Image (tube, rainbow, N blue to C red; front, side):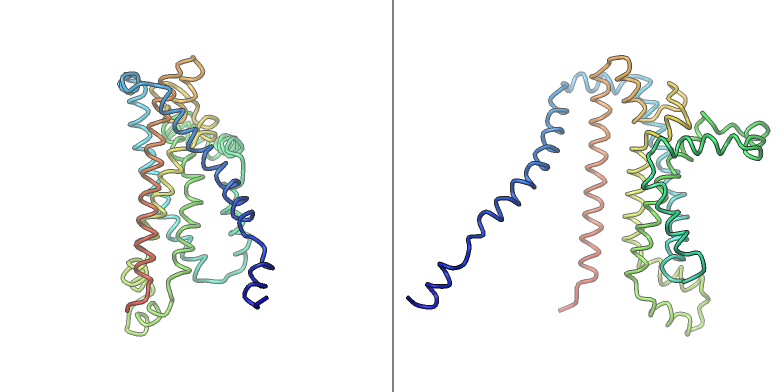
Length: 277
């Protein structure tokens, strides 16, 4: 028997390994696909448009778009600043700050809402609400609840982005007479534009899907603090399944759009980093 034939008979078949991988992976993929198909087939286009035409849902759509956009702008400002500091500098207490940033990501959403509610009952913020502007159970609380969670994702995204940008170009700009701020705005930030797009998209999507903190801190009041996730909750609570499904499909469409943008940003970033032939 030749050496090649002995090796072919001795080598175990790889089919069971790949079959196991395919089965385990396929179960989850099929589950997600089945969920989306079941939800889409539950209602008709007529019921969908009828639900979306109601004043309550239109108000929720409007408030969601406004609050998520404001949350994204705030998250980008904070995320860019904090991500840059965490990426470029070493300082005392950095590990603690790094852990604190992850708190909104790992905490249950209801706990975050409860913490915000208690925070705004403390004396200084209570005075602010009584004398300047009402926050709790009002529209500002929606933005604060969304920002508390979404900003953590923006910070993480921007830190990874700045980690991938070599500090050499920034150092060269400093030697050519630029200040630290000028080097940041003219050199670092343009190189981070794909990360900014990814951070903005993630923050906006996370804000759109936020439910627990808003429910506790803002309430679920019709035509006041109602956003799309709380609309689903309110419609389910009164048994209006069609309206709940319509809003859910709208959020699924937004999620798919976010994923497409993220894939586009990631693909462009990969092409930009690819070596030139």
